[in-house]
Length: 219
Image 1 (tube, one colour):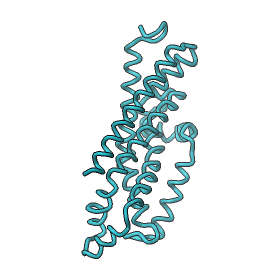
Image 2 (cartoon, rainbow, N blue to C red):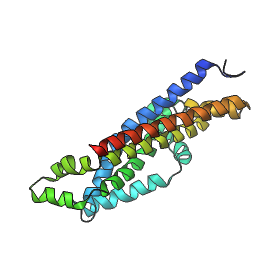
Image 3 (spheres, rainbow, N blue to C red):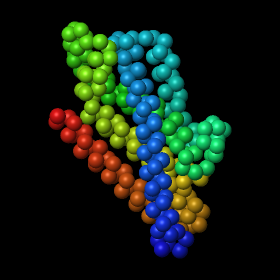
Image 4 (cartoon, rainbow, N blue to C red):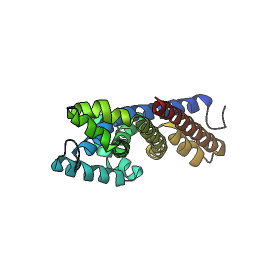
């Protein structure tokens, strides 16, 4: 037994649930957020596919979604969550608001990473006759690859914090364990254990992300 109220199996399952929520949310959020970030960069004024209308629509939508605290977003879209997964409780239900939370966040981080690329490289690519798609795929993304790895690392860590907050409404995972046992049942050991696990996850992910980014930049 880990404590008088929580078993080792419950604790391990909570960690697995957290990893599952973070993994699924990051995967789907990245599939949405990375294209969003690319569109923001290429359609902005002076971009290689400059489009005032597309940029004027995407930019404020991302700003609005990013301005909402996750706990408010979590509660506000409960009807939508029920429509998608037919429940508002549990790990699958938590993934819906997590995706909506992380996708625009990734989009903005990707935008910042791509804007760090030297404009001269893109201009040279266009001068050589590269199409917009070729400029993006063969020049823009490779040049920003190291920074993009750190972007996804930051997003992953943000998701870990968000999954902990999802526990306040029965979202499952380590956060749910901390609320159900550590807070509501005054189990100090359970609370400390969940904090330690979250710290280990964050430190491990950050260190691995930094390693990959350094390796990408050297190449």
